[in-house]
Length: 363
Ligand code: ADP
Ligand code: MG
Image (cartoon, rainbow, N blue to C red; front, side):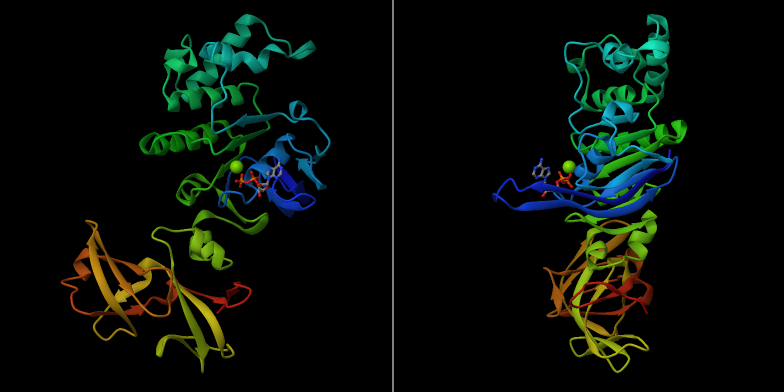
């Protein structure tokens, strides 16, 4: 099911300052293609949950409309939208068994949709198989691990075959290993069912690894919608460049002058057709080539061995943030020692942004 957001805005009365409004979602216009897994990504408080709750019907928009396919669902209550919901805290009924939790949404079906006990059991087993919890159908939630409980929650969200599956930070309560494993499971389940899925996370790596498309948000404003790799390789603005990628992209105060980009008094890149002005120059950690006569001279702090690669940590007066992190293949970094270290920059790994608007400068 395709989901379309049209001029969607949600304002709240501020919790902190009386009479003030907070715009949690500001004029969203985008289309979520049928059958895809969309990652809604942004820092805490940027409006991810609000967006999801507007789509589910748990929240009513201040203005704008929501369509499922061609159907306007803006004024429909959640139970009539056919959405499956999964939250961070599982929200299972503690006194019910796993199977009873899963079939819970089926028990209130009325009329022609009403199901027999046997049909409900069969359906429960089908989704339990999908999320691989069949052996635990008679357990209570507390007798299961966090990862297993979240699978039950996913099974329950899928049992009515939702038009859209909505997941709000579903992996945040799991430990690191389970989180990795469960996110791969989620991807598999989404592929097998083909249900249009919207997945909220503040973790850029999580969003990158499982999404078909990423929606990057900041303070209620849409920043970029793109394929995961494009958000990394082709960021729309400084925020997106800095939010995606670990180690974080390196940001320098720089200027364009006479067709070249200067960091301090060193020219690091040629640019044509750009007028002279101050800019932000950002460089991905893998965008540095260590070489004796490199264009950019940095003060060497330390070299961290990471196995296949080494991380060279250095500083530069024009650098914003603590230090410069560069990732270099171990065999290309023999004995980096001394006071300074010099780099050339890979043009495809350098992005320039306007100083004030922080918008990308297209070269
Ligand atoms: P996220 O899920 O990205 O962390 P939310 O959608 O929960 O962000 O919140 C977005 C903004 O809206 C925040 O500033 C938050 O404080 C505010 N907000 C969310 N829900 C309410 C509410 N019920 N009342 C007032 N402000 C709210
Ligand atoms: Mg949230």
